Amino acid sequence: MRTPPSAIVSTALDKLGRIYALVNNSGVAGRAG
Image (cartoon, rainbow, N blue to C red):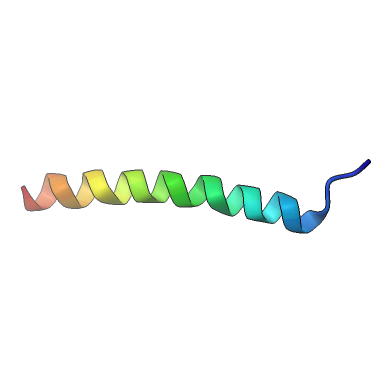
């Protein structure tokens, strides 16, 4: 069975979201603090 494109997109967005959140948190905290 092939994975539906929607599942691939949602998974990719979830991973990107986590990475972006980590980078954004550390970046904001580093510059502000």
